[in-house]
Structure formats: structure tokens, C-alpha cells
Image (cartoon, rainbow, N blue to C red; front, side, top):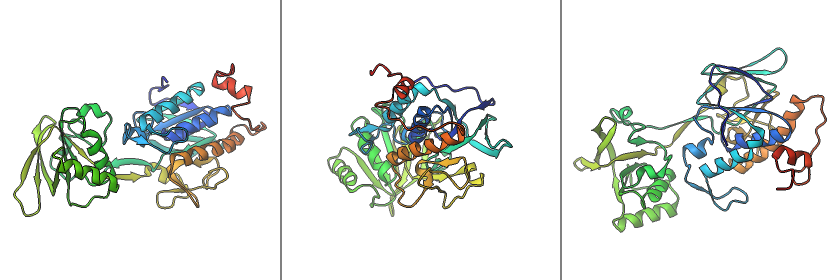
Length: 352
């Protein structure tokens, strides 16, 4: 799908503004489109997919219906393909900053880059909010970030035949240590203690590779980055009670977790509780009419933070959004399998 991404700083009117272009936000485009509602999406990241493409684009996901296994990037690609008939507009690399209600009842959203969007309905599908990685406390870290120090794996192949130092003891650190081991020249895992928070099976596989001499494990603390012009050559490491050790490496992946922040959404006058937005379970509407919250950012009794839950929430949200966008029209429920009208919208009216 070729994304429609206009230059920032312009003004647009649409039916629905979606804040967040992760899987749930993308599927919301589909559900809204079936009901003839046009959507514009705003996301602080520079591409659609949210955490799926930012944190684990090549990591397998096993709980998407009809897909025994699919990667985060493939899921995003499939969702983009599915919403192609509805031609959504993306405003990427922009933060949804200000939200104000207009006299006619519509909402005006302004981004940090001056883009203005006006619509009767706003849908917050921002996952846990904007997220930033927790960074190790190391001198001159900024000089290496994005060049040889990374907080996520976008392409596994960029680490092929390289010595990669992975710092951390959770699932992300162990998963990538195992996934990169077959293609990297060497994987070196560093953690401050010999106790890991990852899945037991991952820990067992890691220790088996270490015992076989196929991976290195060091228990202790990172002390210093060494290199030039943003390219690492080594990392100074120190185990408790021992002299510092210089570990040669071409790249470092730091997995110390993420700090999730609601950002400006927290100042929009919504009922926010512990960085989550309570909603009803009939429409997934917030305490403010015409503003909905779907996906990981919302809360209700029994809430499960699963992508498939967000898909369900998007479908019910769209039903109520229709009533706001088209107050004088009758909402008629139809099935895509039998409705020629819906099939025509999807471009499959001939049954293909």
C-alpha cells in the first residue's frame, strides 16, 4: 500500500481522527471504512505498525486468529493491504498535541508540527501511549545511538557477521540473543546479575548455547563505551570483585525496558486512571462523548491487553462513531460475506 502522507502544517477535515497507527488503529480504519467513514491517522513514529514494527518487526506472534505464526511487520503489512480500499491519510512523525472542541461539536486536533485535523469523532488507539527506551547511564551514549547502539531491531540482517553485545535480562534481551546468534559472528550477553526475567525456555536455550561455546555471557555492569565517530569498537565491563574487562563489539543492543507516557493525551480532560483511559464496554467511548479509546490504552473490567481484543473494540467503536458522523442516517448491519454493497467497497464485488 502506498501511504498518503501529506506535508505537515496543513489543515484537513475528515470523519474520524485516529491517534495511533498500530495494528488496532489500522484495523479501525477497516471497520470505519465499511461504514463509509474516512479516517486520518496521527502517529509519533515515522511508519505505521506501532510497537509491532518498532520493537519486534521480525519477532513471531502466535495469537492472531487464522495465523498460526506471523511477524509484527507482516501483520502490519497485511493490515495495510486490507485497508487499501479506504485510502486513509497518515500524518507520521507527529505528536497529537492539542485537542479542542469546536462550537459545532466537532474536534480540532493540532500536532506538534502544526498539522490541524477537524472531525466529529476522535479515536485514541495509542497503545500504552508514546514510549521511549530506558537508556543505560554511560558517558557519550548519544554519540553512538542510532549508529552502533540500538534499542530495537529493525532489520536482523544489519547485524549479520557482526559481534553484537546485548545488554539486559528480560524477554527482549534473551529473544534477540537467541534470534541473532545464528547470523551474528558472535553474540555477547551482559546482565547485571545471574538471574533473568525472561521465559524459562529462553533462559535454558541461552545457557545451552553458552555451555556449548556458541555465545558469551558476562555477569556485571557496563562501565564505558569505546570507539570513534559513532562506531563502537569495544565496551568496558566489570564483574563484581574483578578487574575491568574490555569486550570487543561492533554493535550494542540495550534492552532495559520502556518508559510509557501518555504525553499530551493526559491533558485532554479525559478520565485517566494510572495512565489508562476507562471506557464502557458497549461502545468503548471515554467519559467525553465522541472520543473513543481502543487497544492497550483503555481499561474496563476484564480487559485483556491483546491485539485481538483491540480488533473487537474497533468494530464496536465504529458502530457508535457512525451515529455521530451520520446522525440522520440509519445504521444497517451487514456481513462482508453476503453484502454486495460491502464487497463493492472492498473491490471484491465479483467474488474474487
